[in-house]
Image (cartoon, rainbow, N blue to C red; front, top):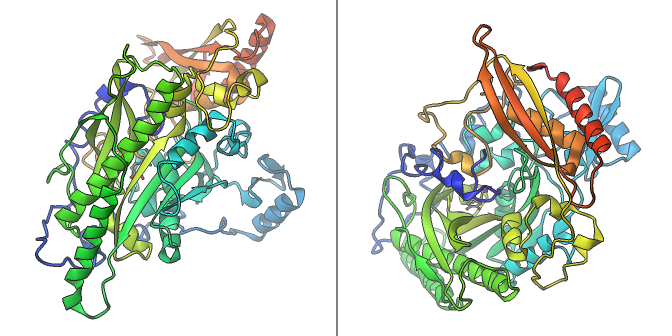
Length: 579
Ligand code: DAH
């Protein structure tokens, strides 16, 4: 199962080996040792120490040959025109103007997304069902729970300090999704089993952080010092009530600039001090809240270091501003849920809400944290955040800026706020669902019906254990620290992104077929049985598909017909043999 704070992972995931020790076992790259800069001396230009971060610097990824590596480092732009036939096909796709549909012709296939044409190559793995979810823009419908939640969060980060964006185009370069943020080449999130590749250079974004670099670049000449971004994000994943291959994220950042006068070194210290005073003033102007807070240390030299370029006092202040801002977010959102009568597990509405800060790891922040809230008797991970890597700001042209960033999954929050029990409901077009919600208000969801479910099993043989064809580093000794998967999705046992057609079975391939054939009729898919045949050594797996419509009762014939189509498609998988 994917481990992420912004996707929808049940709390139990935290107890798995990948999450609990993620930061403690982190293997910080050399050069990431903490250097506390005395506040008595002005720090260097924040950009000057970038060389200390070879593992994170953007220049390091340019050495990768993008022709060899899916998710390689082409820095933006359209799909490179490989041959004239592909260029002609692109024109044809534009002329046809059938957005989000796979079009075949002249031995090629491709798709038009947001008016841009992409010709598929050996890395592409888009399915019709995922393309069907593009352009729904749930975040833009003011009466939809996703949009209501988005607006509530935006109200904590208002103009004129923050610019509140949405990003309609889901296609980003692999460079922006991974490389520019410091994701190592072997990061499991880059795998084709986890990420939807439009072609070898473009993906359907797996997180809103894919827009961070460009958002920072655009801040060079903008008056705002912060932003929020809301968008739909895409991850190939398991099927259950809290996972859908498309969900929504929000991301925020806030920066402070020092006006270092060019060439006048003796004026650097006052400029630095001014910036500190600005942060202090901004902290003072944040509204108060009454949450009960369990704090984690601001940094840990080994596991959660202050970046070498940073002044420790600057970091203390920024973290204090970051934490206060996000506590305010929790306060606003959860008070609204309580006011709407959504039960938080405490019998007394006047009980103070409890939150706790936990050390975390993200490739693009240091130090990093997660914020958890105590809700319905358990600690629930809500968001990830931290101090932005200075190399990322410098690469965006913001050399004298420092700041924080955070990211969260909207569905997880909206499910709590509105008491929505199944993630598929967000995609429902049934008026009995949609008419329950109104702009600007949190209302408790009233189930309009509960239709019976019906399960069918599918059993098959596979050649090897259901792991990757080319397992990624199992030892974590490589460049991906444990827990790195948490940031953009990915599971460390999966196939490498360079693999064109994974030679071994992968569970997400089953999930994708079920999604494609059954759509939202599939409530969950679970592995219910596995054994190894004593004489052949082959492994048998049995998955149980639970079919249930949220809107009507399915007939037996209908379910049988859908299931037959699932079996039919699975029979085409070269990595399995149906039993
Ligand atoms: N992109 C991360 C994810 O998908 C969330 C995140 C964490 C975003 C920390 C941030 C951040 O901007 O600073 O899980």
